[in-house]
Image 1 (spheres, rainbow, N blue to C red):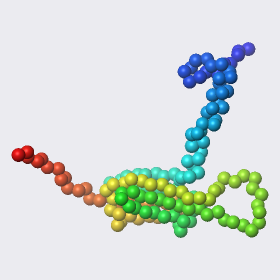
Image 2 (image 1 turned 135 degrees about the horizontal axis):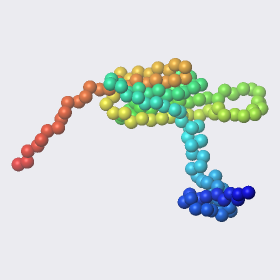
Image 3 (image 1 turned 30 degrees about the vertical axis):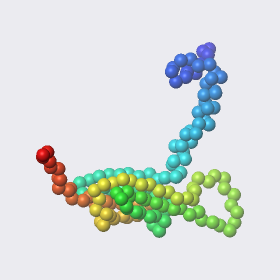
Image 4 (image 1 turned 90 degrees about the vertical axis):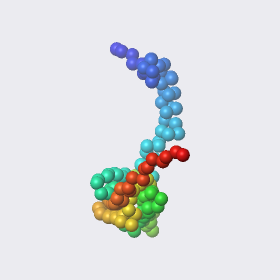
Length: 147
């Protein structure tokens, strides 16, 4: 039979105890759980651009229209949503609980937007925000003569 020996990052053979120490250290690293934690504090967004506008589609399943706030200030569009947990009088015995209450927020820097014409629609758990573009400004570049 073959005797398997793990490799370290440099593809050199690593002693078995170093391998397990490495796994232990990786597990308790500060950023090990970051991908899992970020998913709970945010929501997924698609940002598209066409000739006339920028389009943002945000997945907000289980949210109500009243719990979503959209603000546009200083070329930043901020989408915020707040999920409230429904409380019951009975104490329930959960076997698994993955849905959490909390506040979720995403901000996007988008220039060249006509803020007075921004439109939003919420349908089937998807928020669609349309940000119409401004007309391109005239070119203000000019050559300055030196005296």
